Image 1 (tube, one colour):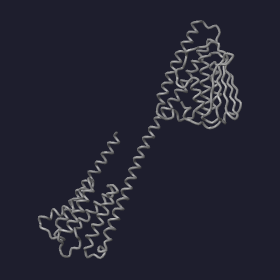
Image 2 (tube, helix red, strand yellow; image 1 turned 135 degrees about the vertical axis):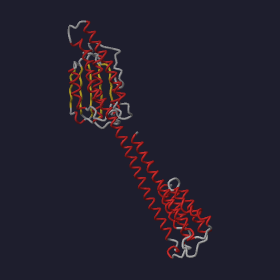
Image 3 (spheres, helix red, strand yellow; image 1 turned 90 degrees about the vertical axis):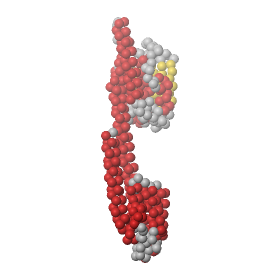
Image 4 (cartoon, rainbow, N blue to C red; image 1 turned 180 degrees about the vertical axis):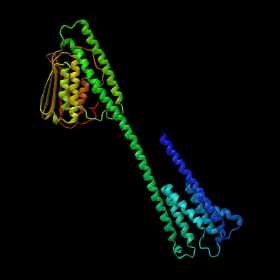
Length: 401
């Protein structure tokens, strides 16, 4: 805000100085045109200040309205050349001051006015000088080319100055836009960093707390009813806190762009996920047939999220049930996540987070051109089967939900 006001103050100051200089030039022109008019034209003394004024004062409009100033100056020049008698020996149809004023106004029009108006002023001024100056005894002017060529050069110079000024203004505006965009991007990156930190530091460990609290009654023998209730209370509170954290992450990522700018989990991160689940008390075994390094990033992200959701659902709804994960990388990537009959089935408990459950896993698989089916097994367990292509994802933004 302070910078904007300072910039406006500088602009106003420059305009005031320019207007003051313009008034000074008009006064000088008037001081020269009035007393010298009698040397070139035969006019009554009472008419001299008016004719001199038409020659000198239109320059006052050079910043406010150069088109109007040019029209007054050119029109009065033509009228003086045709109607005001010249003195013997005078070779110019109007005064030198009038010529200088016309040049100044033509240049101002070339710099500030629309291109069509510049063309009109150029043609009209060239015709004015070609027709009036050709009546003089000067051999070069009699050709009708000298003054129009001078006007043409002046217009071209004004257009070049205009192009430089416009280019400079466009560059400054682009720099301002770039600076604003850079600041906005920094804010978004900071929000994404905060979201990642919250997820990595809090949400992941909170999930482990939920899993450990829910599986403790089935992993530890001899727990009293009070201890079981305490573990149940810990799990409930941790789930509520986890849902609030996920909601906060959603707010931080509601910027209309991709939620994160840093690399997302890949297929090679799966062993760490499985080991973390095992350390949290989930009875899990896994096999990997083939190399996970060859899995594309989008497919690897979908695979990671599907396994993550499958383990979360198993821990919530079938605590204590052994889980087997089998991954095969051949012509396509095949994933099988299955658990045995649960020791105790918990129904009606959901995380409340968007994108969870079978529908969310199917959406992730479909986003990369794969498929996923899930359902109960004959032995009472539950199984998730997915087949994902080992090519780039069809919609890489769809899996970043």
